[in-house]
Image 1 (spheres, rainbow, N blue to C red):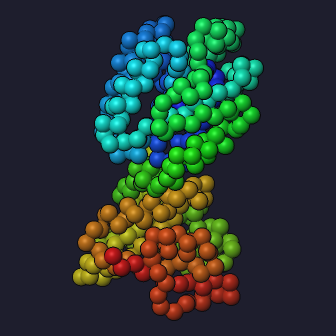
Image 2: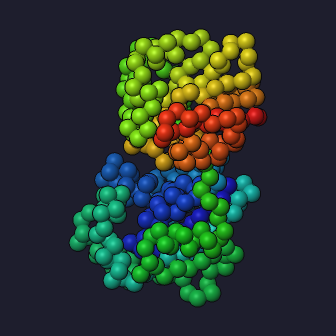
Amino acid sequence: MDLILILGSGAVGKMTVGQELMKITDFRLFHNHMMIEPVIEIFGGFQGGLINKLRDEIFDEFLKTDYQGMIFTYMMAFDIPSEWEYVKILSDKFEATGGTVYYVELVADQEERLKRNKTENRLKNKASKRDMEISDGRLQYEDAHYRLVSNDGEVPFKNYIKIDNTHLAPDVVASMIKEHFGLPDRSKRELLRRVKLREVTKEEIPELYEMQIKSFMPLYEKYHDEGSPAIEPIERVKRRFAVENRKYYFIMKDGARVGAINIGHNDPNEKNVAFISPIFVLPEFQDRGIGYAAIQKAFEQLPEVTTWKLDTILQEPANCHLYEKCGFVRVGEEKVINGNMTLIDYELKL
């Protein structure tokens, strides 16, 4: 497993850059104050030994996951030997798994860092910084008593970059880090972890129906298709629900119902062919890759299926793109529904 270690002085932007880097990679952020703040809250003060112990537990458990890696932020005093020893111990832990450690040092002048010390994001995540008089004084004290910026040529690490981010936005710095180290784009693994399918119960059909109307109504208002799920009666949903060889599932993201999918066999004697109809995601959750993740989860529900089928609206390129991204290809003839709308069939052979 890989590690991105972001070093730098207080309020230089380590956490904020880490937050942006997590958005564009498969790395998870573990910023230093995630352990510091709970300990201070419980014990009423800094407990260095306990914080280190808790950090080690997090590292050890995280190394058991299948993430690409972790982003860890740390304010390193370059003039203290024990700090170098700690960085080596941490690096060895990740390299022992066959991973790579990437070292990022951020530097910014004190005037800029004192401004950043008061930002909303910092104070939201670091309660111990909210007394500004104390917090500013601590920052200035640390600058005066420790060497928190490396000397030129001092850092021996192979995968190392030093960035003066005094005048750079966090997302820009994150992109620089990603590009410099050639980190791969964020994959779909994270979304697939967070999206699950949960079978709909009979008692939940009214909620399912309301979600279906809300999801399909924009398309109905656009095309006025009399066969639209937006205007079908609830009795039709109940009949579809009762089909023995088909099932409705809520699409769940982080525990919330964000859509639904119906999958199964139209012919109960043909177990190798399955259909998706309908599938929908609530408008406020669309364009987030949830439909893609739901279809992948549908495949897992019926592993014996070798052919999947569905149809969609030709005039909706986003829908066509989604299904083609999942591996579906167009088959058959177009079906003109009205002057504005045409249905096309898609098929995927596994």
